[in-house]
Image (cartoon, rainbow, N blue to C red; front, side, top):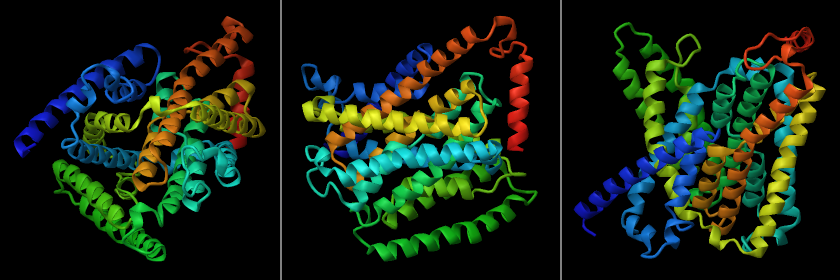
Length: 439
C-alpha cells in the first residue's frame, strides 16, 4: 500500500473505532458497568475473537498489516497521555486520607496476590508450559506474574466510587487511597521486571538502572523546579501550560522508552512531576490532557483486541484461566477484607473495600501490553490474563450492588445510611469512631 492508501484506511479505522467504542461504552453504562468495559469489548469485537470469525476475513480487511503500525503509534500516544493524567491526579493528601487503614489494605491486598502470582510462576513453571514454554521460571516472568495478579485499576475504581455515591465515605476513601499506593508499587516492580528484556537490549541492565535513576533525579530535582518557577510567572498563558504538559508527557515517554523501559513509565513520571497550583491539579491542564487521552484510548483497546484471540485458549489454557481467576480474586478480596476489619472498619465498609480493590480494568491491560511487547509473555497467556482482567472488573459492579442490597435488608429503611437518607446513630458512631482512630 502507498502512503495515501494507508492514510485513507487509517482514517476510516479511527472513525469505526470511535463509533463502536462510543456505542458499546454507552451500553455498558446502561448495564451499570464502567464505560471502559464497553470500550474494551468493542476492541475485542473488532479483532479475531468476533469480527475475524465472520466470512470475508473482515478483521484483516479493516486492519491490514500496513496500517497497524500507525494505529499502534496513536494508541501508545493515548496511553502516555493517560498515564500523565493518572500521575497528575495522584494526590499525596488523598493517599494519606485513609490513614492506617489504607496502608494496611494496600499492603495486604498487594503482597498476598503478588506472592501467590510469583509462587505460581516460580514454583510451578509446568503450569505455564503450554503458554510459556521458554524461561517459564525466569526473573522477569516471575515478577510480571506478581504484578499481573496484584494490580488494582485506580482510574476505574475512582470512577466506580463516584458513580456509586461512595466518594467521601470511609470505604471509598480507603479503597481509593489503597489503590493509589498499590499502583505505585506495581509500576516500580514492573519496571524492574522489564530490565534485561526485549525493551532493554541496547543497554546492559546495570546501565539501564543507573541511567533511569539519573533521569528520575533530573526530572524531579531540575525540571520540576524550573517548570514551577516558570508557571508562577504572571504572564504565563494557559495555552502555554497545556503545550508544556503535552511536551513533558511525550518527551518523558520518549526518554523512558530509549532507556529500555516503556513509554508508559515516562508518562506517569511526567504527570507526577508536573507542578500543581497550591497542590491541586490545574483544571486547564488536566481537562485537555484527559479529553485527548479519552479520544485516543479506544485505539489502544483495538490494538489489544487484535492481539486477543479467545479461540487460542484450549483445555489447558482454560484450566489455567480458572486457576488464575481464583488466585486473583481470592488473593485480593480476602486480604483486603481482613485488613479493613483489622483497621477498625465495620463489615459493610470492609466488604465494599474488598470488592472495589478487586477491579483491574485499564491498568491491567496496560501492564499486559507492556509485557507482551517486551516478550515476557506470549499471545495465549496474554489472552488468558485479559480475560482475568475483564472478569474481575465486570464483577465489581454486581458485587457492590449485592453488598448494598444485603446491607439494606440488614438495616431498617428508616435507619439506612444509603442513597442520601439520614444515617443511623449506630452508623454515625461507627464512622466517627473510625475517623477518630485514623486521625
